[in-house]
Image 1 (cartoon, one colour):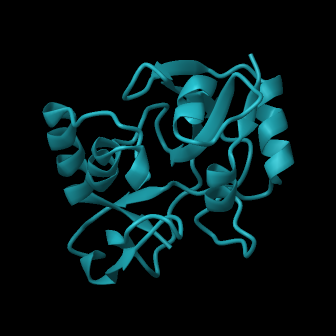
Image 2 (image 1 turned 45 degrees about the vertical axis):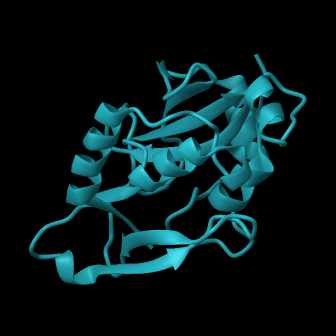
Length: 184
């Protein structure tokens, strides 16, 4: 099985100007090579048949992606309308500023099949393409953000995958994201 880093993931995980909340101590090429040379500790099913999650012990100093919202840190939450790419419509997002999350214990690579990436207009030569990565304390998936589920349901034309919303998964995601937030 071969894995490549998609251009979409490359710009989000390895931006030109490094940020503290992206992958650390590793180039995009080293990240891709690691995924191809090291078997994951676990392979989890993603939200659709074309999606798999490869769980790896964190080999970098990358910090956890999310933190719990508490009364002590709620005042550090910020929000804005943002788009992930120039083509996508901006959506409301929120994050912490001024927090110092712990180093993640796991990196969970989110992979899409070659066939799905071709359907989305992002063909690859490898079997699987990395579309994202979760930095977690547990060897498990962080629920997809509700807005990502909505975007996926809107279809490829709006930056999604075309997978309809699973109402129960959506409710679980809302519960998680009400109690947690990303950070910058």
